[in-house]
Image (tube, rainbow, N blue to C red; front, side, top):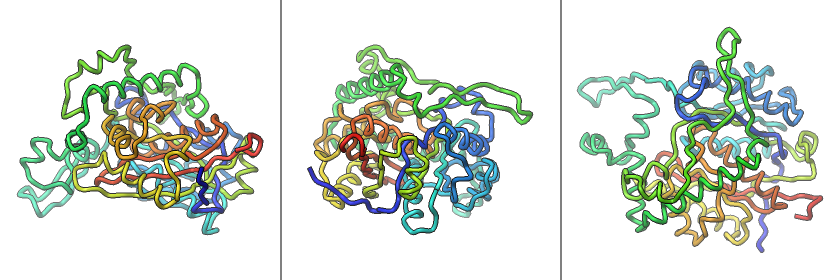
Length: 415
């Protein structure tokens, strides 16, 4: 087995100082009606308190989201103020890669010595997302009204400006999945089998109570402080009972059917990156050591986003000197089942060995916090296995793949 050195050797992730909300689907919970940024900021100290961490133990905040929110101009300083402790910081977004980028940037802050305890706060709300009016001299109307969720998911400006392509959906996210499926000659039966297996993984973990370790019920309050509801589940997830259900679904594009793609949802997630000393102080299990070994991004040809993740992983393995045989845990953000099958082909890896406790294809996709939840699930799974390398990856708009490898060691467990 190969070994690799952390790219940011001074940065550590304190085990257990993480968590977030469940991800209710679009317009299925009271979360659809609130200011998601303020909600996430106020939820962060609640989540951290589960591991007895206080906001005043942090000295910096990196936030991430992709959908415009009220007072976004004020970014992380406003969010930390709303969370009860005024911190410096900044806000970032990179479509679906936002969560993992925030973790990487937090690690860089600690490595540079600029800060010792960096909070990562990510969130998004697809429900009631805003529309924007933009001056545009390139159109006869001279203005464009953009619905931030549906227009961006339905049209990729990098793949062509043709009105015909936009009208026929040739530039949509679904089209890129179908196009990639044809390139790799995927079989719909295998897509259906994998999709069904992913649902079984999720519900097995949920029924066993594993998800309750880092997903917390949260009350949703209105502006008066009155309870509007509670988010206590990934509302909107169907429980498929047979493979025949998947096989009977209509293909929206090649190998893309309802059960094999994710859905819009709302939610938040948070975690910390600190120095080694701080990690031992803050973690409920200081004997567990977690470090970022390396990260990589890869941009593939236009319109083939699902293959970008496997290519990013290939690049990362070359960079670290590791192989898939060295990896104990594999988790990804997979908006389509196609993503996992293409990865399996590119890396010659058995897709059964991925996403032990669930994945965004099942529980939903609020962009900003998605890869933070994926990372937390991967790290929790690796700890359960006694340690090892955890590979986390996902795709982002613009045909980009992002990947990171974390090393988990347990001084009491021998790994």
